[in-house]
Image 1 (cartoon, rainbow, N blue to C red):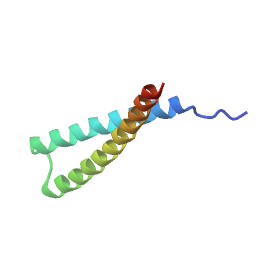
Image 2: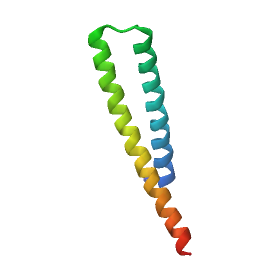
Image 3: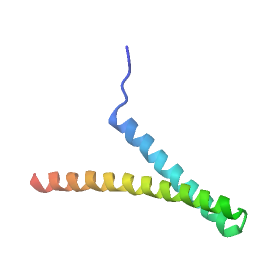
Length: 77
């Protein structure tokens, strides 16, 4: 018997990934501000941070759509 992931499991994983990405962005910013990186590494880390930010924005946008739908459902009742 194969156990399927519930939507709440998927949401929990997405939430953890979001939090991990935010933590990684904060680490990158701290390292850049501390001057710990060479110029090439700054650009690489900056590109990584930008990609993480895009992923976080997408996550938040999806959650906002869910909230809007829930609010709309409540208003219809």
